[in-house]
Length: 195
Image 1 (tube, rainbow, N blue to C red):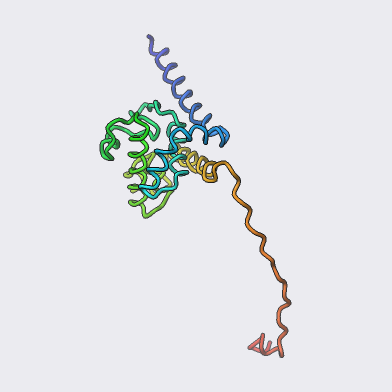
Image 2: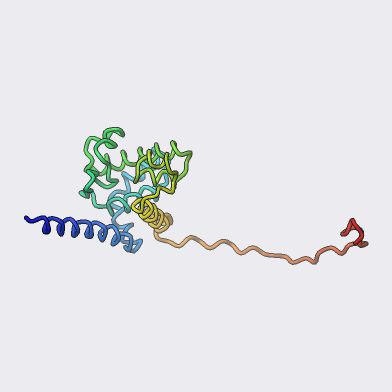
């Protein structure tokens, strides 16, 4: 294989990976909910155990793997929540491609990040993608396009999934009563300087 062919293969791989992630972003919420249903028991158990909204876990999975358990990244991450080997080991995951283990380890890591950043979801999401060191250095606005796109994907997916595909109920209308302003008894009440 020539260098030119190798470069073309790398470019095609990058385009297909980005296209894959983008195509997941464009999927209708019902399709995402259908994909998530396969893993709902594991997601809900981990969510309850680690006190995290299940929709946030589903949103991370959407951005990481689009619910493809066999997904692998070019950086060595694998499984639904795309755990790299070191993170998997750190959070007690022996088999990154076992859905229940991966979800448990990824959720445990997400909870650890939320605790580390005082409950800040934007910081935790940025750190899940870029690493804690980068977020410690830059805050939630890590200056990498990949992290900005990733964070946007997570929050877009969360907004789709948070209400199980239903639009949030509209706020109840508030009855506004217009009352005329009280009239001053004399001008001094309103104008202490007598102008």
